[in-house]
Image (cartoon, rainbow, N blue to C red; front, side):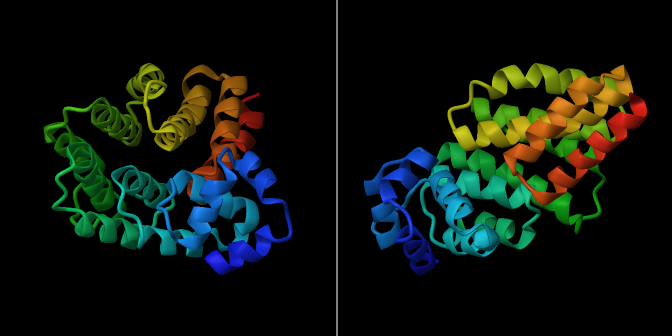
Length: 239
């Protein structure tokens, strides 16, 4: 992975690449030398810029290296939105005994998401939401994640008004999150849901397209992108 990225960087000016992804040339050098665990968000931006076709393979390599709680949280979200359930399970098992309080809360939430996506326990989505509400979360971020799961629960049980209103209210809290990758990803998740609900509930073609376009541009996952393209197509029938 690093050899490939080094070869690509030689074709460009490193300081220009650093500016492009919002970091420093020194940080890129440390990452390429393997001497520093760089922000996973920064690493992902570098991969998408220089080796887009190898993104998934390179991210799988990085996920096996990370140790910082902030990177583990990003990795869990990345695996979730890209339906990489094996990698998510790997992270859940590897860090299950962490003493970091915030990470521990995230692990509990993503364990539910893992079971939800894998469906190996046969528990319906609504029951998963009930399980989520029983989790003891104390952090702002943990509560946001629980509410996001509630949005999905309402949506999947066709309680569309509740899903739409909660997603709209939740966005204010999401904007206050410190982790920029999580802020972007959850906003895209909510936008994905709101895009279809804007059509179903309000026949609001403009909002539906705006939300769907944001989700596509966020690049959180092919599934979300495909769904958003569907919404944009459906919006012409509503129009």
